[in-house]
Length: 161
Image (cartoon, rainbow, N blue to C red; front, side):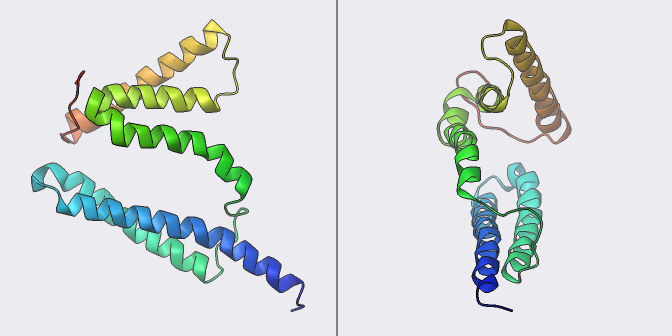
């Protein structure tokens, strides 16, 4: 292999390795949080999901480190700039919104914000805003039925519920 091809291959591997490492670190934080919180019964579902998440993150990291992750371009600077607003909204939801407003109210606002940020439809059109509100409300009904009725998971309570 020529010397000019080798640096490009290593740069491509790094573009896959960095996101895989970030996902693995996030998965480790989530599993640590889910296994150190009480009451244990309330964290059964998060423990199950976080355990699967860690296994998948480890597998993904090993594939990226071995150079087997060849799908896509990895994580480029433009991609980071594209996802930064959504990540910011989610961080606000996790650290401020869920405790202050309650899980469902904060999730409604966060989903509506992320949907609005990435929706290419006009932000001046009433019709597009009605569609965003309808889709957000429908999404929250599904989340409520899943967490509250089917899984009976305790969600953060706040000002609204």
